[in-house]
Amino acid sequence: MSVILVINSGSSSLKYELIDVDAREKLASGLIERIGERTGRATHTTGLPEPVEGNELALTGSASSSERSRELPVRDHTAAFQVMLEAFAERGPSLEEHPPVAIGHRVVHGGKRFFEPTIITDLVKINIEDLSELAPLHNPANLQGIEAAQAMFPDVPHVAVFDTAFHQTLPPAAYTYAIDAELAEKYRVRRYGFHGTSHKYVSEQAAEFIGKPVTEVKQLVLHLGNGASITAVDGGRSVETSMGLTPLEGLVMGSRSGDLDPAVLFHLHRKAGLSFDQLDTLLNKHSGLVGLSGTRDMRDVLERRAEGDEAATLAFDVYVHRLKGYVGAYSAQLGRLDVISFTAGVGENAAPVRAAALAGLERFGIKIDEERNSERSDETRKISTDASEVTVLVVPTDEELEIARETLAVAAPESQRRE
Image 1 (cartoon, rainbow, N blue to C red):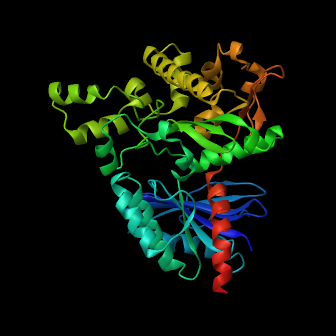
Image 2 (image 1 turned 180 degrees about the horizontal axis):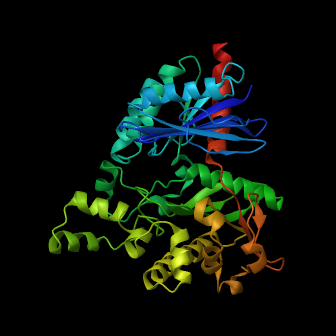
Image 3 (image 1 turned 135 degrees about the vertical axis):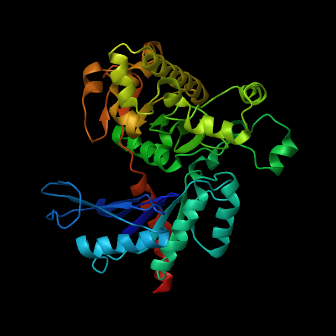
């Protein structure tokens, strides 16, 4: 048996997928939103089409899949899990026929304590809670999901898969900030990196696509979504990454500023009277694309740019300028570059971003094929020319599958011991 239930718990949401790892088949997925509000929304997608009934709202169906949504109050994460179980019972697939052998939980911050998938114990939960000061918007919600899942599934192993774990191979020169060493050690100030499951999955898929062992490939993975990061992967190991102590550092993102002169904060505090909480909100929620153009959605930015909108054009240019700078810097760190992979919502779908980010780099062996780049597909594909020394790919990410794989790898021996 290789069925894994993957849980991604947010502060007001619960995302889940039931995955048969050996078959690489997603049996079902779902999203429960607006937890704790007056009216929540639950969406459950299965592999079998069924008719829309009752007060259900959605919505799409095909010969191979069926999606159903409904609105209802969802008091807390425990209630959300009950909604999920009801969806499996009513819409399938049956959890009795496809029992998960383990539950895999996405946990955003593992600090430097967790460098691999970890069976969740009481001590692990204490550590996740302790690390909440480094990820106050994420770790507490992740922990709520763990507690609720353990109550619903008490007889199977639960595994934490950390966003930061893949980056534990960063060398000291990459993860160390040049501030007072004692202060940094006391308050755990260093680069941790994020999107680790995505970077790991995509780098392995890219190596497989070009027909080389991942241990022999030097590559860049550009995870460009609402959150965005770039990682240099040398022989399957993360050696440099753009996000830092928090997911705020690095590239321009949907609502996050990315890199910024720290003195900007002092200036705005002194001159504009902004408090530290206000500055935190400014840089995380009102900066990036939304701060520059009024929208965080790259699709809107591209549409308005095509119409000549100056704010959208500037936002696009700033976004690409930062991205290209990181591509150059990380290529220099690797010394040789075999593959560049674009992934996540923007990376997989925004051809103009890919083209602009690599434009002018032909002297470095990077040549984009315009026709290939403009094509759309859900499969891994090559968008560089055949003459390009560096292979440029679009690789759809699958963080849930990666979490399921890692969960199964550590949970299978545990489940066997329980039998």
